[in-house]
Amino acid sequence: MRKSLLDQLPLVPVPIDHNHARELGAASMLLDQLPEAVQLVHEDLSRRGAKRVDPTKGRHGMAAEQVLRAGVLKQINNFSYEELAFHLADSSSYQTFGRLGYHRKPPTRATLQRNIKHVKSETWESINQMLVRKAQELGIESGDKTRTDCTVVESNIHHPTDSSLLWDSARVLTRLMGVAKEEFGLGFHDHSRRAKRRAFGISNAKTTPQRKRLYQDLIKVTKKTIAQAESIAEQLDGIQPASWTQVALLSMLATDLPHYVDLAHRAHLSD
Image (cartoon, rainbow, N blue to C red; front, side, top):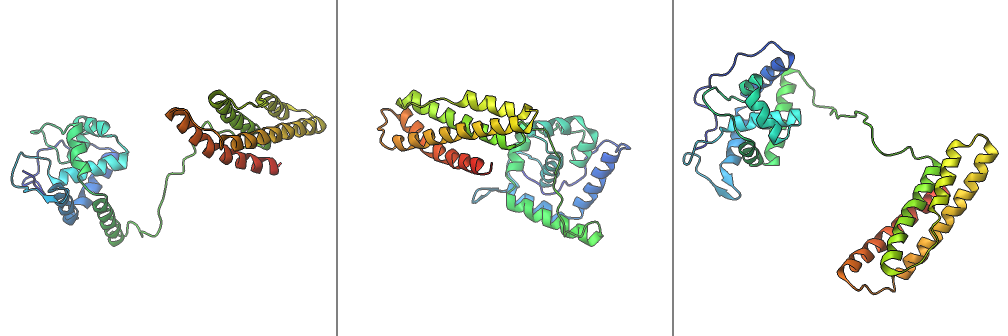
């Protein structure tokens, strides 16, 4: 049995005096002013694909307004279903917002996931538009701008200096040619160590003449590596794979080698 709205609000904990609790209270009041949003969720929960399910039959499930509020909590906090289940069981503020009373066991992760996933993306979009219109009516938001998270975080991507781009080109092409040599017997000269030494030498060079000399050699090494990669790419065209593994590797090399050769040419021409 599936209800849209609860017949009687459950007994819930008294709201605590905290900023987040007050935010949840304001959001709850706003959702109470959008009964049409609850109805949209109820329609989705009453269907299994194209088939409609009679909401008056079966076991008691989460009411549509509970599913809506649980979905809102998950979205605004970026919770996983496991985290959502924990907070709904542990937090009195979230229980109050989610209309979960003392008399019922909090929903499990599986229950939350099953119910929230029944709500279509189009429904969430419609609910978001309702919220924007309501915010405009109340003078809270104009709806003209969208704010996204632009927080800078640490990553393992290095700063793309000229020398590091050349070294990356030589390194990646050498790795791909190593696969061609191991699987198909195509020989080449490995210049990656020399390219690495030149790149590190450039970053630690104390004088301009010293840095220029190292750059010239790094460019020379990169050109040699590019030429070898182009030659191996041509040789791959005439190879007949002997196994499904070689078919997959040949396909990968036929795609990746020309791609990284093109990138290497761009890095080389930019210096």
